Image (cartoon, rainbow, N blue to C red; front, side, top):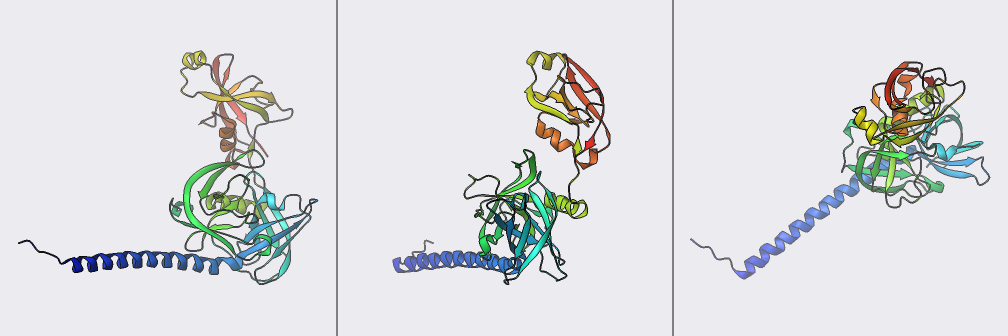
Length: 330
């Protein structure tokens, strides 16, 4: 049997559908708004504005507390060459800080508020819980303007970013939560208010996007800065450059990789000088890790390699050679 629906009934159904769709969208936006405002209320008391004196022009940035006894995290470039750093809190207090440690390799620094007060602080998220597409909220305290907020989603994980030292920062998060001037060093948090990254602004042309050092890397570096004041890394003592492997040598030696690190110079009194490594060698692997570039060398020479005998494979005068090299510390 065919059922006929009156034109007025059709209009009514269409209007109800439109109202339902609009109401659903409004509910979603309301839920989004509530999520962001709730996070801001939770996180903003732990976000500070840092006034930095030291260089001729002075400087400022954002930071955030990670412990109730006043440890503050920010970007290393915010506090570089500083003589005095004052933390301005959302409640109007201004407290002096002392620098505990800094790591230019990851653009992270740790400060400590002088005094014995108890402070609100942020907790780290589990790095494995961070997903592309999840809500990401960047909060800063630029120029003392409390709780400057941008919100978006995590656009990508596992990015690499060149630090001012020239070394790659691994485990970088990219989001479309724009990073405003002065927000550098502030927290990037999830919908639960937990830290997923430290906002960094080392790409001046990066407008409309935010890069943040991921919580996994950040927690590792921060822990060592709080303990030692610096981060230990392996060191060989060579000047090298990326170089392609000639096709004939690649075929002759049955190599799968296309490039390695050509040793331009071996520093005097360095671990490399005491080894069999020579100027003119091309490094192909170190500690059983394939080396295609200087960045691969940096990744391989982490804290675990310090003062260890590492197998190194090089291409010398067209032939492969493998021997041991002892890593130093930098």
